[in-house]
Length: 143
Image (tube, rainbow, N blue to C red; front, side):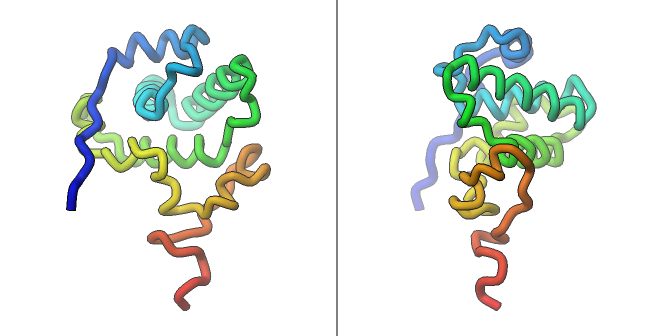
């Protein structure tokens, strides 16, 4: 089995997070890796609920300012923030976090937990929805 090359940290995320929070980051240049690393940095700076609020508001503003406000998805944001927070280890640097959590860096990560229909629904964009899959299988299947 050929595994993809590991994804590596590409910038100073302490400074980049400051720029993100100041709305100085261009949405077109904000990659999935940036989402994960900035979310982690914000979780280091604030307690969980405040971090979720700050990150969500900043992402939503970025998308709206780029003319893509409808792309914001609260379910994806809250699920990723929860998983990142759960996986963070005390004293672990960003490079170690990225190295040990490569699965989070793939854009299809949530497909393990959510059906495409549920994740892309208008409800998922405006409120948090619980996963409808477990271990890649929809709830109720295989019983």
